Image (spheres, rainbow, N blue to C red):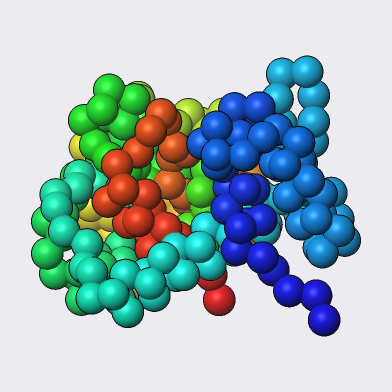
Length: 285
């Protein structure tokens, strides 16, 4: 009976994060040929190619990306089990930056689970816009960053859950005024979702005006609930006071978005590696 080998899964993670078999080899204390053999055995087990190889390195295939999420979760759980059996608990301080579009209940669940498992970990959480999360992570101001990605999904993320639909949101009692531009509610100009929404409206030929600019998602939710207009948001941040705009309104169709951890940059401390794996493991069924 076929089974997944943890060593091979660790090799897949290292290769994808390093960007090539050559770069991953010294991290794994293996030769390049041994790394290649590990990947081949894993591909034989799965029955699908997992990596796309080129002169510039490797990228995961669709199957490789799918397996990568399971691999991080399984390796993280295995490491957690070993620490638990040895009576070792995580401890230390860690800074997490999260996009304010991220599911509020999911964030609370993640933080609660981490606190229950590892009460000695001191977590500092900042809720920012995705562009600010990326900048903070690139500048070393946070240890882990959760962002929202829009199509065409060029950014490599360690996904947290399935893709989520975008919706045009309104107050339940709100109705459009005939012959008037659509009152659009937005975040500041640095918000990628704002640019996406305005682009889709222009492509569809929908006349609109920016009626209100909020500083964050909480302010945007309040503006929607107050009936000030319509906003493009992810479905998870809809509240009971809101409803999707009906198709009859003629607004353009919207895509889906992804949420995930920004990829590893350089060598991560053991605590960051372990928390990254734990957060990922919470999203694998």
